[in-house]
Amino acid sequence: MTHPRPPRGFHSAKVDAAGRLKLPARYQEYLKLLSDKTLFVTLFQGMARIYTNGSWERNLEKLSPNPEAKARIAKFGDKFGCDVDVDPQGRITLPQLLRKELSLEDQPVQLRFYDDVIAVYSQARYEAELGQIEKTIGDDLSWAAGLGFNL
Image 1 (cartoon, one colour):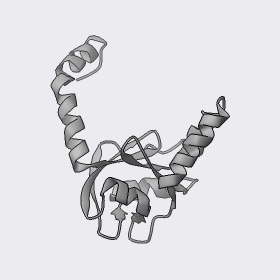
Image 2 (cartoon, rainbow, N blue to C red):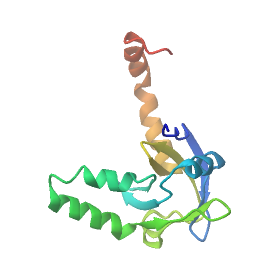
Image 3 (cartoon, rainbow, N blue to C red):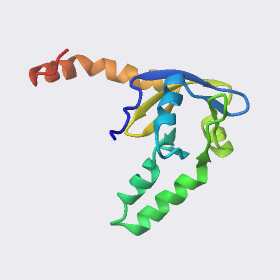
């Protein structure tokens, strides 16, 4: 059986005042197809990240050559994170410390799935990062076209 493909693109969502993130319908449909339903939510590099389909464990396994660093990264992930479930309304509750650290309550967010991890962008970070990309995308697209990328 082939692994289902996660949704592409940025998807608008909102974290409500109680810290619940309503997942877009396409995300809910994708998550239902996965054999491993565990979701681990944590914070890295100033962003909430939702590890799906066992990706938290796979990422930690990559750190096995340095057990001390692996343990520190796992503890840091646990500081802000926890396992969460999708409720019947398609929401997950973000950990309280993470919500407080990122000021996410009652805020719009942008979600992007990549490599079994959902990145949760605040609206400000989303706009800032895309603004930076737009400054150089012309050069990147010219380079890609030179390699045969179909634009």
